[in-house]
Length: 63
Image (cartoon, rainbow, N blue to C red; front, side, top):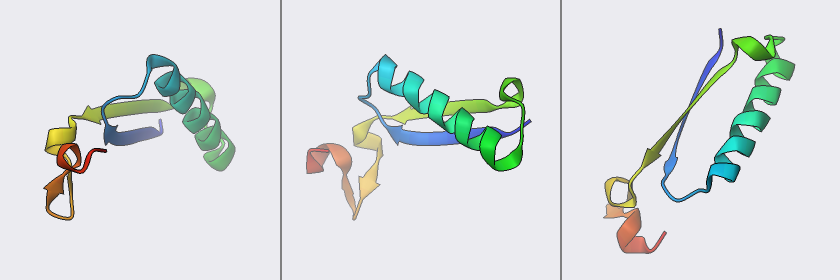
């Protein structure tokens, strides 16, 4: 059972996350011939204040 973990900054809509899950699942199925029902996608949304870029939080950078 393939498990894909995606870490990203918070702020995407439910529709964007749904589309991401769908497209990642399709890519895994095509790449490793896994059945769609066996693919798991886990999205972890990280607060912008908890994501550092070059020593500064993404929130401070306005991301």
